[in-house]
Image: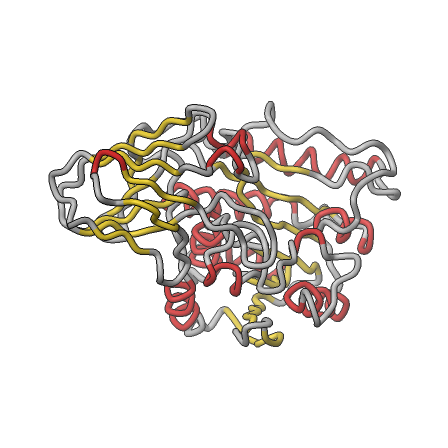
Length: 373
């Protein structure tokens, strides 16, 4: 008998019928206090050697319908190696077909990064002499919000990830970034830390991550729409991070995300803020151009359309930080699908590629550190 479950850290699925392996019916559950949904992560047991056809029957109502175009789900037997499986969207349902080679297998929207893995990683990285650790406060569910500081330079570089919990690529990227930043044998990282002080919040939305949400925290709040009016009652993660920024100042800001629809990596700038000028343009252009030179996984042809002059949404972190601190402020978006500029037919965009991409960003940061202020 086939068993389908998601009652674990970051899990999300509702199984409505698993009697027939070739006609399994599933539904993605929405965020607890908001109607966002697209993230799924579930376990199938007892299906070794059986041709599974799993129908996500409410896919047509997902938050980002364009996310299903040319999309393939990921699967793993051990939650370490995630590979792509046949997936199709017929306009109503997302249909995943696969024949597992083992009795137990996991399927997900993207390689999951549960809070259990996060806590293990944080405990290990805290041992680095390069980093100092502080707890900014607690989430609404009582989880500690971790903050790291590194370096002693005059310029203050802020890097955060995973405001949207379903965008797990942010956590994989953060692993690569922290690993290079704390590598005492890395000359580039060492030089950068002499010139800049880094402030890092590795995971902004731990409650949403644990609950299996796509976009919101425990209060149903989209953190990346809360920066202008953050509160301890609804968005303590943003409120506490913002207060720390006010203590340190900000000369550089990078907010790491994932995008459902666009099949490439790209950067979004803060064009449209009231104070946008040639300096902002030059800083962004330089960073983007150097990343394009260095990384075969980056491109600049696809991205978000710019806001109209003076009409940027200051509730979004990127725009809020740029306007408040007059600094280079960017959102990094990575794909749930594969990156078309450098495709990998087996893994698609993957955890290891996220890690490597993060290391390339650190190289660019080293080159532009003198420019940011």
